Image (cartoon, rainbow, N blue to C red; front, side, top):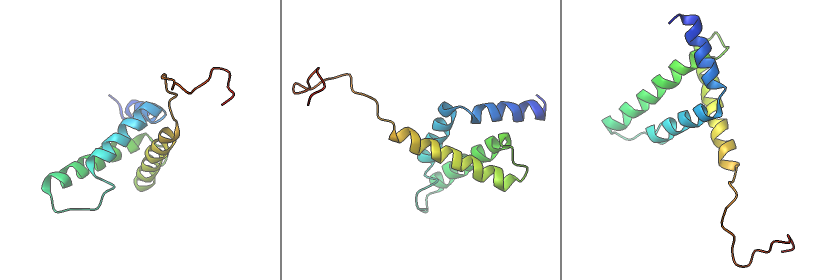
Length: 103
């Protein structure tokens, strides 16, 4: 696979909210945003998450790797905030809910 097509593939993935949510779960489960504790396994998870984000950041339009990495992290965190704010309507109705909209 050429570097150009790989960068294009990564840019395509970064445009998908589903992929950003997946990366958000990687960030959360890695403990990347939590205080550091002396645990070799935890440090390994953090390093893996950072490696994944650095690799994916190559799909950003920025030429500076640090800017691309920062843009990727911001994009992932922004999607987490946005998706957390979207409440899914409940299919269950309570016994006090009315159908006429006059609560």
